[in-house]
Image (tube, one colour):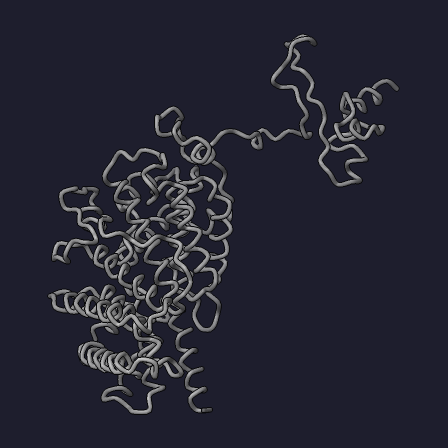
Length: 498
């Protein structure tokens, strides 16, 4: 009968748990939880016995209260993000070595990604299409460092790869929601990996926010952009020079961090284009802020500091497409600031914004190979400036001069759309996979202005019809186009019932 007794004693802790000791209750010393702790549904902590190699009088770092059983993976260590906030000077002086993020990746995430060949196809698709108008991921660094057979050992690399697959995947056909299983899995995995505090996780977050903006997923898009801005600040991107941050030793990495920040600024402005008044989460760019460098050189991994331009630099032919988009973004921010203020007595502000946008638009149109993404972005900013005077029930009667100018702008854009969109098929002839969502806002407002106008402008009916066809075409790529179509139907119903 000795054996069962001996085996039973192996399941008991040598001493009472902490909770029973503090309550002066009798503890049955059961593992992993005594009966009283199990009844209360609380953690049960036992005193860690000394290591056998130490005497009873020798203090051991192993001793202490601990929950049984102990999971060594849960032992707290001082990691990079903690040091970054508590004492970043240690990182600045290279006193702490930062190891790449390690951890396990759930099997279902790896199944969503597919094998390495499928991942390579996803990457190629991203750099061929999305990257052309939103180039904030270094192509050379991506292929050299991350697209390796051992990618599954880095959760932040897996997260970025998953976000690439998300943004390159067309939304479901028909009326199905873009909140797909891939979208939900990416969001869930992002929450698990964001603590790595890696620029890869930030880039994945930007792609998720872009997906939400392009598919009309609100308020998620608005909240995701804000989270990206805070994440960038935490990484030391675009923060005060008094904040110690990790040293960046290559110009390509410096450029990548700058481009990530500009991507967030672009999304921060555009996500609020239809509802001015909400504060931005990113500071207004300064005139001495550097613009992105040459796109082609950066893709090849060569960045020349002598070719850098700032926001105050005049627009030139050697500026990259992304740099020109960033300049337009600054103007959009000024437009939204103006609309959210008491603009009735600020004639000089809107007149200057109008002139600058018109000048930028003329420069973008009068070249051999126009950048349609930049053009549609400028159109959206220009239309946003006059939206209160274009929409029915707006403030037309408050400012007669501006109302007249709004009608001139409406006619001007209508004529340009008629010439470029309808006659020359400049926009609708493009592959939907290559198109950005920037132009959908201005197209929606132009359609709404013509539908609500009592006097039908020349070409107006034909322009509205063509733009609606364009929405249906782009809806294959960006679901927000279908959302705008539904909003136009709602406007029609309002006008018919009036």
